[in-house]
Image 1 (cartoon, rainbow, N blue to C red):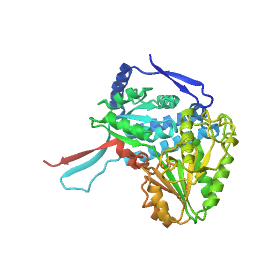
Image 2: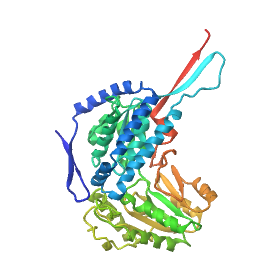
Image 3: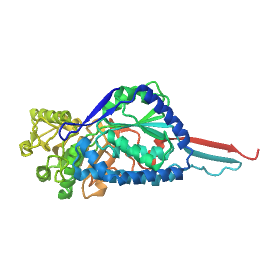
Length: 462
């Protein structure tokens, strides 16, 4: 039987081994999902919400164990890993609270002699393909609303974070969901392509790279199965002249370096009004130099390793190319002993003297690095922020709300922040434009993609 290994970035050792399901196992799981859907969809919405709330309770009760598992699988500092459990709970409970209104029937204006209604009905079995970088926060966006709507789920998690899928499954088992309503499959890429194109799959939710999104589209070619795609980003921050500089520095820096920069909506490029450029750059460098890069199992560590040595090497290469084109790194990596230049531990970096001809400013970095450029006006900042094939989020740092609104209205992104960044509000739609994806999760609108409308048109008194 085929198997795979999960290697921890902490020390490069094998953390766990899991068997791949056979094609026969996958076929049986899809049949079970269809049967589970037929049972689960008949549960009244209030009962589904009750059971899903019970699953969230169980999940939260395992916070300490889950935090340890996150750290061991992806290297996030243990001081921060527990926060993902809190985020999971907040999003899950918000979506369960929104479900009754979002899934309620729409009743048109009364028309004499007729009864009319539009109902939201579940699609069937939803395949969810989740990434490793926020293993629970990315998955919960679709898992909870899909189940609340009455769908069954087949979850494929990253090979880097198989324990996330197993933890979620355990929570749903504790809650008492019917068999087949939720399953996970540790399948490989070829099996994924065959699974999502199977007619027993009604919808695909994918979170990952642009290349992965193209692979999903290719697998679905020739089918009528729809997909929601949450892809990459090269998210900009713009610090205006009137910004609270101390607040902007602390929060932009956190957006750059948290989770070792491995966030689709993390800050990767910063534009600063030229009169504030020196102060902001100095502040970002000072913040970075105070980070403690090291063993993520230690409470004092604030910057852990990247997920793999190969990932760290890719970022090192991007930095080297930028330097070769004239950019200037401001942080001496030798101050961070854990970064040997040959492992997953990567020193933070702030880069100046860069421009948009450099990959560091136009391609996803996904590491603890950002390029910083000076701008002379809002118009210049808008032009540069939009000069990207990505469009996930952008943040504006200002004390002028009207200006932020005016700037935001011209930005080609799914979300515009003012004075914050790298955050998902579950009451707002999470969506991207351009190569950052399509569709939406979270908020009331998230349910629209996990259901279909069914109209009832009855003539009475015949």
